[in-house]
Length: 54
Image (cartoon, rainbow, N blue to C red):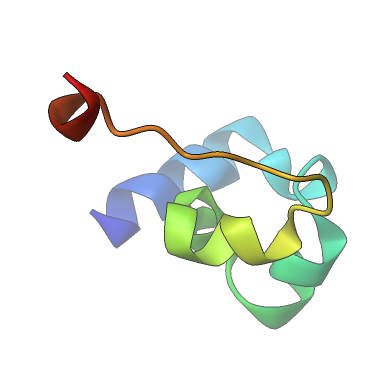
């Protein structure tokens, strides 16, 4: 799965639009994963999992 997102990040050149603190620490493809990107979010966030909220 990581290789797939690394290829997506390279194909679309998303490193420029990803949070800089995430891209500085790791490969841009890994910044697609929630456990990595949530550290870069500065605004309050409420995650909803429909499987449990049903």
